[in-house]
Image 1: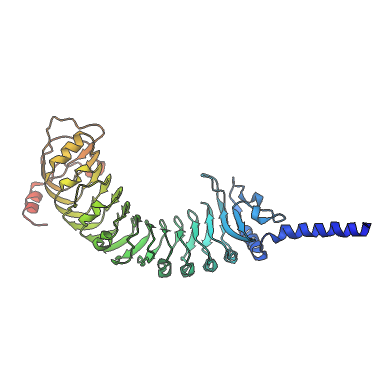
Image 2: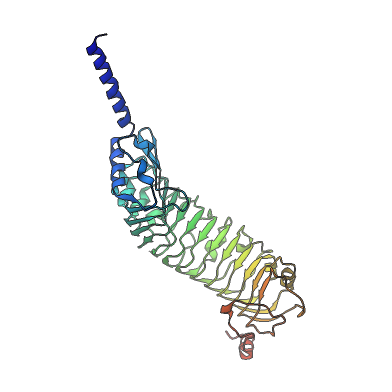
Length: 399
């Protein structure tokens, strides 16, 4: 073989190698990654972008995963717990990664808006950008991502409404928007596979329609908003719930008895405006039940005796404390029982009995002379017994 042919062969091999390196990734994805890197920076102590050397194959970059020459997953930042995150802003070029199925950002100090170009990511299934400083509205265009399953924008500075188009997404399984400043009403969520809805710590208001939340929910947190109106009809359908937190709102009406038969591990309904008596259908097997600071009335059901931590304080309950509660306290199966600030008239307990250290009981400010002296929370106040005139008026049927 002549020297000229050998030279041509070596040149061809070299060109093939160059072509192989740079043809592994679609040129539009290549340029998009460059723009994304230029808009973000490592926080002090982070070394995430050290591997992002564009003279090599971008599919080998940290957090970049490819298939068929396209970026299918982009995880920005070091995912190890406690690692510093990124600063900067999210570049609109993210929308050019049209095969992207997963996009996440680790906690950091990324600011600015969520680019509207996210609506171009038609294959996106997982969007997670939590614990940063993203501001502005949730783009209504996210409602075009028909394959989206998880939406996590929690712990940011988002404002405006939750777009109804997002609520209509058919494949959603997880929606986590807590700890923002979102306002307006809760939209109707149409996905029949939605299992987790977390909207806590926002400024949402208005009522929740009976068909707004699907019965597929296992986890529901709406705490610390300004939501109002009855919820008995919508809750009665959620037979698979294992976590429910509606605390610190302005919900009204009755608490449905069927709710206590659901497989719930934690039930938080405190600091609302719920009224009426509370009548579980069967023995309550929920470990923690908090119904405090409402306007609940009537006698306390003995079916609550199997609850480990029970807060019924600051309501309008009357009558005797069920004797089964005493048995639970003495054998320490009931560990916390708070009944202060009601209109209870007595409890069948021996004044000389010693309540186990593991059990806590607070009875003060009721219509009884306290048979036992037990420590209560400081916020329960110093008065041991409710004024007699209040007890007479209440027992006479005057609220």
